[in-house]
Image 1: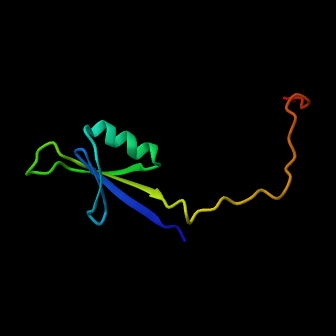
Image 2 (image 1 turned 90 degrees about the vertical axis):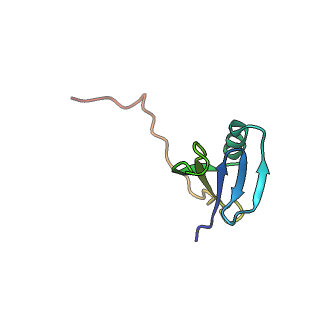
Image 3 (image 1 turned 90 degrees about the horizontal axis):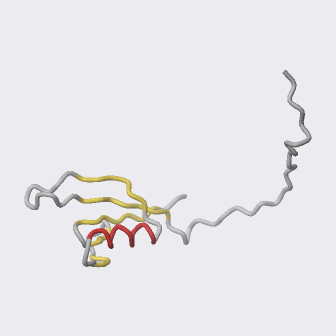
Amino acid sequence: MVHWEHRYLLGTMVFSIAGNVVRDFDEEYEAWRWLESEGWGLVAIEPPDPVRPGACKYYFKRQSPSLVRPTPITTEHPIINEGRRSRRL
């Protein structure tokens, strides 16, 4: 089962889906870069708030790394040497 975490960005504030403030930045660009560097990907943009024109909510999500384990490769696979294959028409 996959567990997803969600956050959103409003102005310079990064929130969790529950509404707790995660972090505050000086600029929206810095907040966006921090989210991307932490592995968050943009999934939705909410239209601007009528009370605060221009303040869109940007929703990000990522898969929880604690629950995802890579599958080890246990078998060998042959490599095809393209240089030895002749092309026939």
